[in-house]
Length: 184
Ligand SMILES: [Zn+2]
Image (cartoon, rainbow, N blue to C red; front, side):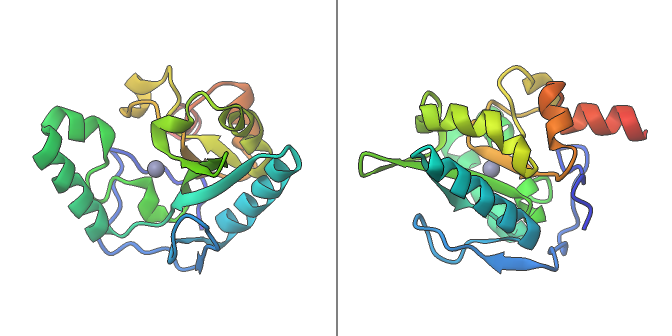
């Protein structure tokens, strides 16, 4: 498994790409969520550490198949039009969720579940953004990097990359910047 793999609008995955080591997530949000096994193990550690601060985070979305992404994109395209859909949801094959290495997390607080932009200003979110790198995760679509990632800010989307996460965090680099500079 290449934990540094770059998947974006310019670097798509094959339709048939399915990660080999998927595991079922024990999530309160939803049943039948799957994640790549090391990604899941690392998220559990992040989750435990968050709990020590009194923060309840969980997985709301993990692995997505090519065909699921296809449906998601076309639904949004119909509802909101091209420019919105293109910046908000990946085309099939261009979603990191197909790698099994991406997690959309949610926050439980005051008997409510906060998702997507609802988590933006929560202290839990700030904590996750500052500490996820210690467990191998990066915030994949940061607020000031839209031109590079070609995605709007997604405070909920984490991507497991392993050891290099702290380097990227400390240097405020996206995966695109790191990979295109280091390896091409
Ligand atoms: Zn996501």
